[in-house]
Length: 282
Ligand SMILES: [Zn+2]
Image (cartoon, rainbow, N blue to C red; front, side, top):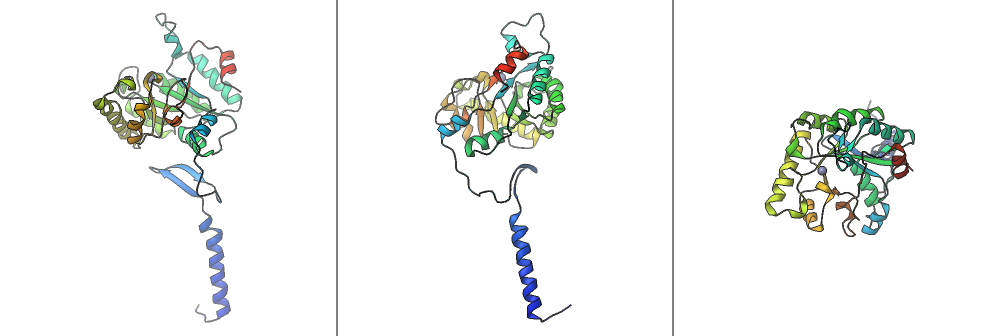
């Protein structure tokens, strides 16, 4: 139909304008990373966010970030110290159940970073579950148990171990990534970063980051220090390699770059469920 009726043309123009402003211009902004949606900014969200000062970031560091290694029953030869790193499956399962029953929801590193840097909201009871050293039990026991509750975690991989007996292989790591867990870097062979010289950064960071990218198809952004040990000389090396945040254990965070020294709590195998309740659950 052709028309020269100016009133009709005017009505159509106004209608299109209203359509544009109420729908197209109000579309939520979606940030994606290699095809996976990372965050969706709700309609009407402010475009620029205020970056928190290091002091504010330190103050906001209240989310429990738990650190596990092996999930297995103790063997007669396990020393008292080793048991700090070996949580029996029955304890681990009970801990997850307690978190779920108490209303906890797991968060991933990017959510934590957005909260620390910009004050983005988190679930009412947030917790982060992290796993170091590539142990096979993390895939076979921990990830399976987490699935029951819709929990997701972070697996810090030491790349030298990939595919060795008792450790995860590349396809298991890829599967964790595709299930929505995050794969982080935990160096090549677990040497203390405080002792690295120039060449060591290539061996312990560049090559492992390339290996992980080959496995998951995405750039690894998160790092965990071997033994939790760090000093500020590591920061420029991490920054240069696009690491967004680095996790240690329980030393105070750096007052200038807290995101490169985020605190975690080891859950020792000896803890009773009562200990876990007292120290983690609020
Ligand atoms: Zn480790």
